[in-house]
Amino acid sequence: MEKSDQGVDNRRMLGKLAVIIALMFGFGYALVPMYRAICEITGINVLTKVDEDAARFARSTQVDTSRTVRIVFDANIHGPWRFRPVQGSMDVNPGELATIVYEIANQQDREMAGQAIPSYAPMLAGQYFKKLECFCFSQQDLKARETRQFPVVFVVDPKLPKDVHTITLSYTFFEVGGRSAGAQPAAGARPEDKS
Image (cartoon, rainbow, N blue to C red; front, top):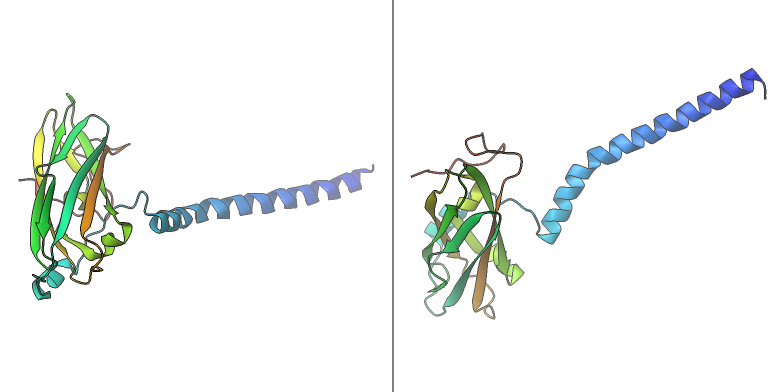
């Protein structure tokens, strides 16, 4: 093989490698929106957004006193926390404003930051469960051995299908990796009232 042929082959290989690098970069860049879309579709790892219309909805909706929906409260933890609702369930009329309190305790001798992710059963109930106030809207900082209570203020949309008689609201609370307590919350997170 002559030197000129080797130079042509090297340029072709360099061109192919440049295309592969560009494709890898593009794929890596596209992973973020793909990940978000997959999480939204499957309902996993979706951080709860503040429902800006929930307060207006709660003020303008009519209470349906002809039916009652049982709301069951559940708590799961990942990490050294104690996490529980102060009551296991409550009966509400659709359209009625209700409040449940969850208690979170840091069982470590260091400050920790945590985040709650809600889930609903049946899954379709999530679109009818309107939260006006929730500790899940932002990350929570707890001092060493600190215990705090957080209210969840909600209303169940009267448009909830009539065959749904029970909704389970389940939170999973976990330590926020890569962030220590006192550091700034993630961009777009709503600061919570610390009282």
